[in-house]
Amino acid sequence: MSPARRPRLLLVLLVPLLLFVQSCSSIPTVGPVGTQTVGAGGSNGTEGVRITPAGPEDGASPQDIIEGFINAGAGTSEDYSVAREYLAGNLSDSWSATDRVLVYGGEQPQIVPLPEENTYQIRMGLAFSVDADGIRTAAEPGRIETLTVRLTDTGDGWRIADVPNGIMLSQVNFNLVFTSHNLYFYSSTYEYWVPDTRWFVQRSGMATAIVKALLKGPAPYLQGAVTSAFPSGTTLARDAVPQANGVATVDLSADVLENATDLNRQQMAMQLQRNLKLNNINSVEMTANQRPVDLGSESSQLIQPEDGQTVPATQVAVLDGDVVFYENEQPRSIEGFSAAGFGPQDPAVSRGLDAFAFLDGARSTLLVGAPNQPVREAGRGEAFTAPGIDPHGWAWTAGTVPGGSEVIAAPTDGAGSTRITAEWLAGHTVTSLRISREGARALLVTRTGETTRIYLAGVVRSSDGVPSALTEPVLLRSDDPVTAAKWAGEDTYVALNDSGARSTPLVLSTGWRQEEGEDGLSTLTGISGFSVGNGINQLFVVASDPACRSEDGGEDSVGMCTMVEPPAGWASTTLVYDPSFSG
Image (cartoon, rainbow, N blue to C red; front, top):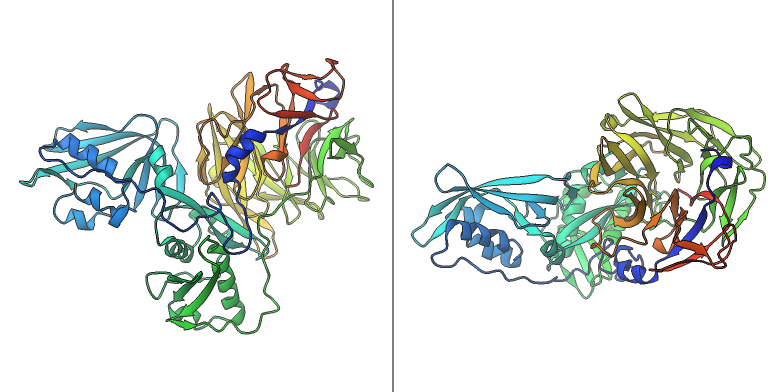
């Protein structure tokens, strides 16, 4: 749609004061070791809510035993000792509760008898699963998970003789028993910390669980996109991370350090320090077979990675057929740069506010430029998504091709563009693509038929930051008609749930979403775009909701815009289009 034909829209800043207070636990706070709070970014390292389930009752039927076993999965004490009471013979010792967690939503699992003697099937509507490494994967809509269970009469009552490893939890119990914590790995250039959200049981020994997960390496979708200071196969010399007087001691096997340089050891120590930001840990000591590790003199090559990257308050937007800066409800021209004559749409700006990208009026050409430099064509395609610029200066977009979509990236300070390898996009139409603020992850919204999905993929780069591929992604969500998603922090993003006539911005997390009613902000009609800066208190939407009227009732006036029945505060601004923070 060309600027001249666009409807008169208001760019409004949503200030969800009450909702922001409710939702603040999803936005991590980052500070010195010992100050991080519970939430997606960290854990307090202590026991969570303790659930004490009931053991088997005398005379219980096979169905009662299976139901009791399911409920006992919420009792984590003494290595799930109550759940083991439902198991027969050697199975009570060999069964592994932590292999995977199946989380069901809505109705309780059904227990259905099978033709085989003493054999039953458990059927549940799966919401998501968590594997043995704490990696959460959303389930496709309508997914039914089935497990086969065989029972035996032990003489003391029915017990389970065969059942797959793992536990089953309701969403309510999962939120009580588990907590999320971000592991951190180095970006490919060592300039940034990259979060990798994991889920752990809330109990003592949290530091041990975190270090073990860290040493095993990044989640599959981040492999090839991030770097660990610890080589593959690194293990603890003893199966614990003891703590005393706020000091956590990480004792590694000595062979890991045999060929390690001072720089390697310093990077290991730095990564441990970053990952053990727990309320009960003030510092970390690294040892090898209980002997302190000599880190040597600080290497000149040691880089202190950036943590919790933020974006500038200045946005770019389209006003009167040109790209402008926008801040404090005021547009201003960009000195030495103009996109007039290209019919610009969906502008993007670099973190340094010194490089720009945008689409032409047909959404078929990606253009890039900089102050006092000519605008140049960086790529051609069809139905390009709104571009973004990553921290390495690459402009990203996705376009449709026969049989799916392709992703291209173009340097804002060079020529040409690169087609990014992403074979898994076959059959998917990408409607939104955003690179994370440290540049190692891609947040994508895709459409296949009537189904929309939100994916998180790793960005594979060379050591100098040149992108080449997107890894096989993890599915974050697939149960809302989402059209776009944009980062609001290191592990928080806002997705636009477009159910037709009305749209709702959803505040979500790469680890999990908040409870219904806390993540849905004001529902509006006619949302055509949005932008989000550092958290949801910097959420802007472009909307033409009839319930949002200017204070004096004038159609074109620029004043305070309030909701007829306001769920939150609104402040109106000048008529601009396609707002975007950097990234």
